[in-house]
Image 1 (cartoon, rainbow, N blue to C red):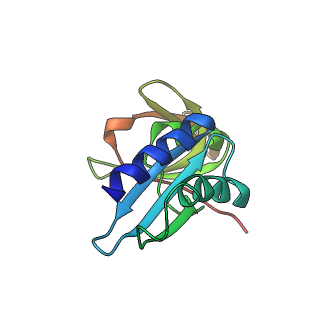
Image 2: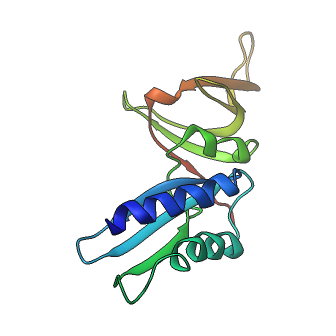
Length: 154
């Protein structure tokens, strides 16, 4: 009963803010509610507060005992939805594929079906001695991505 109410209130809040979207929703047997959101332009503390208030302010605390935690998807958290990739174009990514490949490169493009990673590498010249810098790119389908993370540089 409480779970359905929370789900409805969460959906109404997300409908009000189409730039925000749900990453994870968990509801434990002791009514501990955990909601993880992301946004097309990132998530601010105010966005988490907005979602939290949309739920908390519409449930009677005398009737239901619960805890509510609303979090943003972390910077080191793997991307789980295709929608999350767009805001990371131009950033360095690590992608593990379902067939065991580990790829690293800049996120160059996001398509309907997947992503394009780009990187530069040094390879021997086709003729003569020495090496030449070569631009490489690979398309990876979303259904072949086991895990994708943005590489954070300090």
